[in-house]
Length: 431
Image 1 (spheres, helix red, strand yellow):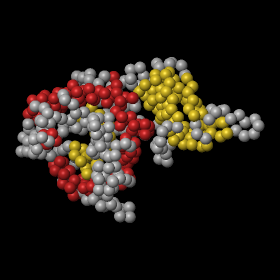
Image 2 (tube, helix red, strand yellow; image 1 turned 45 degrees about the vertical axis):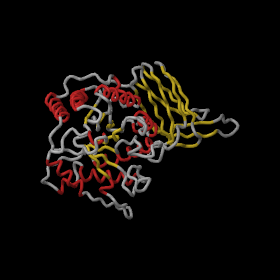
Image 3 (cartoon, rainbow, N blue to C red; image 1 turned 135 degrees about the horizontal axis):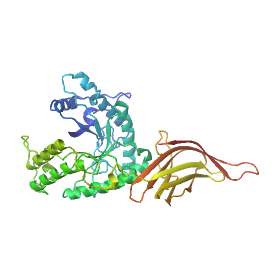
Image 4 (cartoon, one colour; image 1 turned 90 degrees about the vertical axis):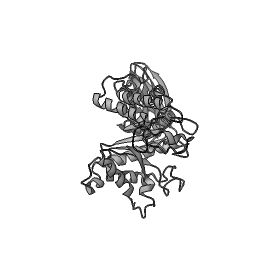
């Protein structure tokens, strides 16, 4: 069951002298009820507490001090994770611990994260730090990029959001567990198309095989018939987890809704009735899930194509770095076996190893054949910690990413025999 783990519910007051005080009463009751029914909680760690947002009192603004949010996420894992204090305090409750965490809900939507002008960059930093905190408690946990809405008037395109996340934090390559998506569309074919397009975006960043969590999907009866809802949910439930799209889970939105205002679509997404009985859409979904569970994922379906296939590796990229002897330049000897389009970006490195704010110091895009080519990137003077990101895109669209942490020293020659600058790569570490 996917449901919010609202920060403000657990920590309504700011910490005193750096000490956090959490009240787990609400979620203790919920987790116990779920566990007694054999159900596992997928918490959405959201939003800001009323005292913690960049706009005080506005829960849908990002946290002013990300460390407070991270502390809450870590405390949640210590309470309900595999070795959580809740299970130790309630030995009679069946142990069904939290193993997956979704970081925020629709951070690319103005409604849930505002302002949006720097949302991808701030979210990338928040995700990376929160993931590190959660992994320190449970290394096997899956930390999911919060479900991305599809672009519209008040929502940044899911493609732009991901592009800017990786641009801000090249070190996310290989350090994302899964990405959640909310591919609402008129029908199942439209859902396929949305997932397929998003897969291409992930492939550009070396994430062609990154697990996708479909954490919201559905139709409201104000815009679709019950027969349409039933057929579409049944089709997707039987297809997506067996497809080549890398879909790890699919969660319909939603079991119950208020059904109060006929003109409010949000009141009519439910696939079950108030008394717990299933509507035709709920029954069709349940039957499809039961069928897949019995039969397994036999009969792989081609929906997303090569971009999402784990076997669709990007081009093999060879990369060697050295400083220029007579110029303020980093020389990269690069080769793609089979050819590729290569993009090199050089960033300042922050104190924690991430990209410092601002544009790349240097950027080059080149087309490579089979032979090694030397590409120069202009360097700042002095001794600098830097990050070099290389993204090679093959002819079939799959990408390979490389990240190097560098310390480069550039000094100007002295004396009458000095010839310009001399740059040296002091340290280079692969990521």
